[in-house]
Image (cartoon, rainbow, N blue to C red):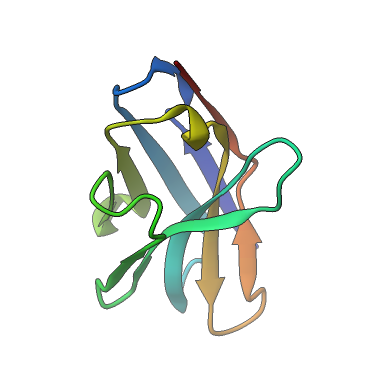
Length: 117
């Protein structure tokens, strides 16, 4: 089993910054990708950013230039540095880990990010 624990969410004013963390533990060998998704009230969960085992990063168009994903291999932790936050960034942010063996996907419990205008 894989355990993912997110932290770092909170309330911030528009234009502010937050850093989310996702600590992975358990059967994290064979990890292919770790990433962040978000779900706003009444909307579907959407992709935000991801980083592969090889270090390739990808971002949703809506966050490019404002968010940065990174990782600390020694700590098995992935970070999402969010800057220039907008009210439309308000959502529950979830960490996702993808492996090339079962369980293929694992999700964290989510952390709330609220951006006030």
